[in-house]
Image (cartoon, rainbow, N blue to C red):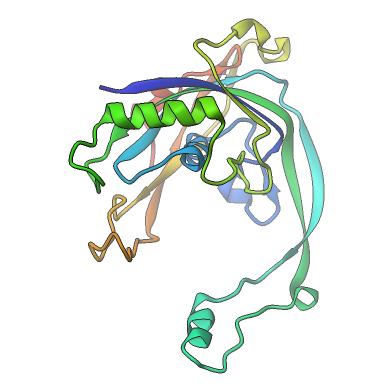
Length: 240
């Protein structure tokens, strides 16, 4: 049995980066299913479940803003961190003044989305013998009602945190902006990534897991009709 939820999510900014424009970040017009799945995992997640996005409702007009920020163009190497922990002389730090660069981001502002979703059991690691979908449903329901999360949910990029999440029984479609009326072809969008490990550690060790970074990208071509994207109707049309 698939347990479903409806939530309203609001934020000051969002950035659902197009993979073909990842240096100078440019956001899609609307959220990708994988970005919303990641947001939900910040609220509650176990290896035994996976989230499935069924519908996205875009309430506010799609507005972009350009910002330019200082970033660093390199990152601390894990191998050097491990080396220093083992007593080697390698220094893992980087210096911002030497690695600073400016990058532009074209992001969304004043966003409000309705998200309809459900979760499914994966058959992977369960912590208790009596674990079932009803148990996960009740835990997630309680966390959504109480505004609880493991780490701050975000809208695409970690720096664009969610301002408000409300659990609702139904969406009020009358609140959708008149600017979004009609049939809008959103073009090919990233649906999500399918990792070759299937969410299971390659070393079969859940205490010290080693996962694969290899994955295939899946795309779909949705239409937004009067502000609503029926993701479920396009699920079978995903392209690798």
